[in-house]
Image (spheres, helix red, strand yellow):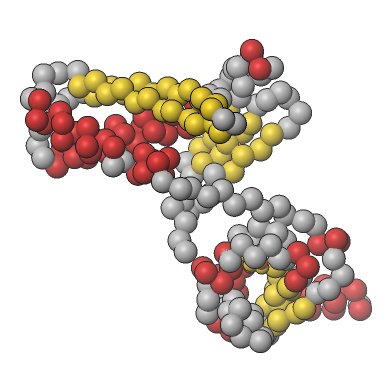
Length: 224
Ligand code: SF4
C-alpha cells in the first residue's frame, strides 16, 4: 500500500468558527464556512474544495492530453457545481461539470476531449466506490499492556489494546512489522530512522519508540 501523498494533508481547527488551517506539501491555506452557516467565509468551504479538486483535475488532465497531441487549444474553462436529491430515504449526489473550450475546436476532437475529461483521476474516485477509514489517536495512558521489541539502537513499544488494525505498519514495512510471525516486530529489519518514520504514521498510538542511547544517557544522568 503506497499513499498518493508522501506528506498527508494536515488539518487543524481551534475555537474560532469555523476556520481550519490546512497544511499541504508546499504551504498552508484556510478553509471556512460561509456566513450563512456561521463561518466568516475566509476560505473555501469543504464542498467548494471538493469541486475545486474535480475542476483542477479535469483541466490538468485535458492540458496533458492536448499538449501530448499537439492540439492548438490555448485555454479551457470548467464550472463545477453539485446538488443532492433524497428519494425513498436515499441521498444521491449529482455533480455537474461544464467544460468550455475558449477557442474553436472540431466536433470530433471535442468528443474525444470529453472522454478524456471523464477519465481524470478525481472523476474516477468520485464515481467509483471510495471508502473513508477513520482512526483516532489515543493517549498511551489509556493502556497498561506494553510489549517491547529492541536491539542496541532502538526500542519499539507496542500497545496491543490501542491498535486499530489500520494495516499501515505492515503493509508499508513488512520487513519490520510482520503479523504472520509470532514475534511480529523485527527491529533489525530497517534502520532506526526508517522505523521511526513508519511509527510516526501509526494512527492509533499503538506504536511508540525511543532510541536506546537517549534512554541510557538519561539513566546515567539520574544515577550521577
Ligand atoms: S499502524 Fe498502528 S494501528 Fe495500524 S496496524 Fe500498525 S500498530 Fe495497529
